[in-house]
Amino acid sequence: MKRLLLVLVFSTGIPFHSYCSGLLLNSGDSFTFEFTNLDFLGPSSFEPRTQVGLRLFGLGGSNILRFDAFENFTSELPVLSTNLTVVGDISPVFTFGPAWQDLQGTYRVTMFSGAALFSSFFVTIITTDGDIYNLKDTPVPEPSPLSLIGAIGLPAILIFRRVKRLQDFS
Image (cartoon, rainbow, N blue to C red):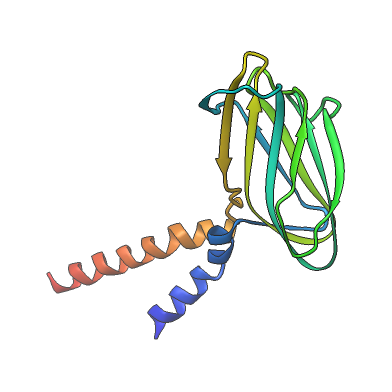
């Protein structure tokens, strides 16, 4: 019974659902992503441009977010800034530029109201040289202190108890 109680106490802080499905953004939350490494896909005959695609699922009524793209740092003026209402499952693609020709940049998604599940994104850059670069990723939430304690504390306690039990038998 004590072992079950310990497992339940230490596992309460582990957000299994969040790690499996993306990042939950509530009102006032933001997600900032800085990239410096994109995969080369090949040559292109398209005009130079930049695209960022998001995969979002709005939870409930009015879910309003802002998308900001920055050439290098969030302290600079944004290259693109736009508001978006998220209702249900949407996948907006923001096309702008040419920007990020040095294959590095930063973007930020900020929730103004409501909540949305941010499950994946991509960045595609067509350079002025005619090359295509791409990055696909999934935002992952930072672990809470309670989950870190659970991830470290539970195995430590179980190992300590097992070692103590073995010493009692010797």
